[in-house]
Amino acid sequence: MELFCQKLAARRSGLSWRELIVRVQSKPEKADWGIAEMLRTLELGPAIQRQDFNTELFILVDDVATTYTTANAAIQRLRSTFPSSVAVVLTIGRSAAPADFLSIYE
Picture 1 (cartoon, helix red, strand yellow):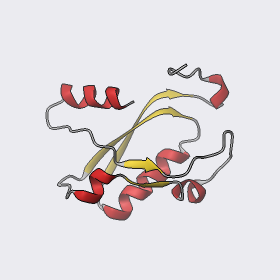
Picture 2 (cartoon, rainbow, N blue to C red):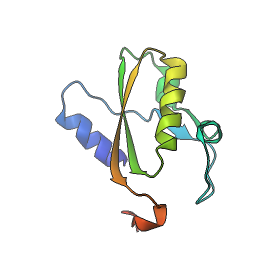
Picture 3 (cartoon, rainbow, N blue to C red):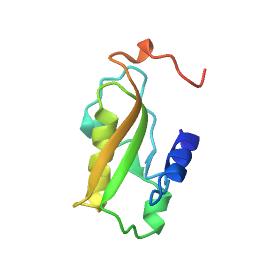
Picture 4 (tube, one colour):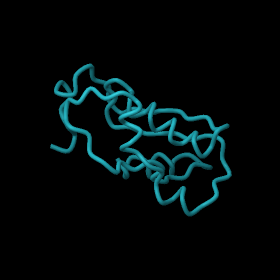
């Protein structure tokens, strides 16, 4: 995912890649978590914690979207620090059931 984001940023002037959101607690596979549970597993990444960002637009990249709970929680986490920001979510794959999607890492 990091390589994809770096290449996307390199092709578009004015974009930069940062790990904005980090997962600090793993989510059990097939867990049916809501946004509140997911928020407890996500924190702002070190890049945001040590820098001032002069942007109102964030592009969040997710490998696979199932229910968009992770994406929605990530947006809420970003807005806790950047309340007037706009977040766009780019997903590489979409699956109604995670088991239906073959991992690109396998």
